Amino acid sequence: MIVITTPTGQIGRQVIENVLGSGEQIRVIARDPSRLSPRIRERVEVVAGSHDDFGVVDEAFAGADCVFWLVPPIHHAESVMDAYLDFSRAACEAFKSQEVSRVVGISALGRGVTGNAGHVSAALAMDDLIASTGVSYRALTMPSFMDNMLRQVAPIRDTGMFFSPVSGDLKAPACATRDIAAVAAGLLLDRSWSGRADVPVLGPEDLSHNDMARIMSEVLGKPVRFQQIPTEAFRATLRERGMSEAMAQGMVDMMTAKDNGLDNAEPRTPQSTTPTGFRQWCEEVLKPAVLA
Image 1 (cartoon, helix red, strand yellow):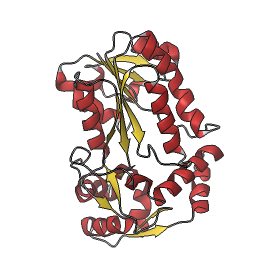
Image 2: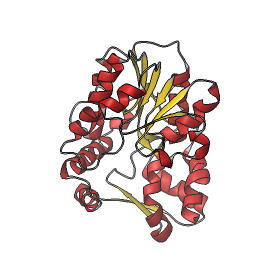
Image 3: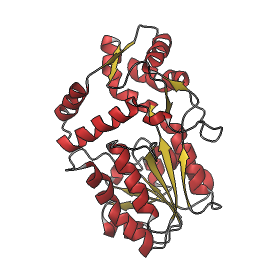
C-alpha cells in the first residue's frame, strides 16, 4: 500500500501517474476528492480530508508501507516553521501509530548551509521531525522548479519579461516537476532502501536567469528578458497576493539565500542529474501555456 498526499497538486498528480500501472495498491488523501479525475478515482482508494488532521492520516496510513509526503502551500501561517512543522506533526504521530515503514518527502537543497533561509530552513526542520519518528526517510532536495515560471506566463506573454530578486548572472540548477515525480515514484516502488538520506534532484544543467531568457526567446520566437527586482518589491508583491507577513519574509529569506549560492552548494553527480532540460521544458510546457 502506497499513500500519496496532494494528489491534485503539481507534483502529487504526476506521482500518481507514475505509480498507477505498478500493480501496487494506491490510496490518496484529498481535501476535495471531486478534483480527482474519474479515471484516477476509479483506480485508487480515497480518504477525504486534510493531511494535517490526525484522524485523516491515521485512517489513511492504516496498512500503508510507504507514504509520499508534501506540505502544501500555506500562505497565511504566523511563522514559516509553524507552516511546515505544525502541519507535519499529526502525520508523524500516525507514522508511528500505524507503523509506516518508509516515507518519501519533498524538501529543498541547503542541508549544512548556515543562516536563515526561510522556507528552506523550515523544510529541513520538517525532515528532521519526520526522521525522528524512526521511519526510513528519503528527502528529495531540490533547487527552484522550472514549473515556477508558469506563475509569470502573463508578463512573459504580454511584456516579454520575467522577474526575480535573484541575480540574472548567477548560474544554478533548476529541475522540472516531472523529474521530481519520477524520482519520488521510483523510491515509493523500491522496497530495498532503509535509513535516512537526502536525494538531490538537480536537472541536467546550471543556468542563469539571463540564460533562461535567451532560451525562452528562441523557443517562443519573441524577445524575452529578465529583470532583477529589489527584495522589498518582491515582498510587496507577495503581500498583495494575500501572503502573511511571516510567509512573505520567509520567501524573501529563501531567495536571498539562493542569491548567495544556496542552490550551488550541492555537488552535481550522475545520480542527482535528471533528464528534463530547460529548453525541452519550455517547448513542452511553457510555450503551450503562453500561447493558450
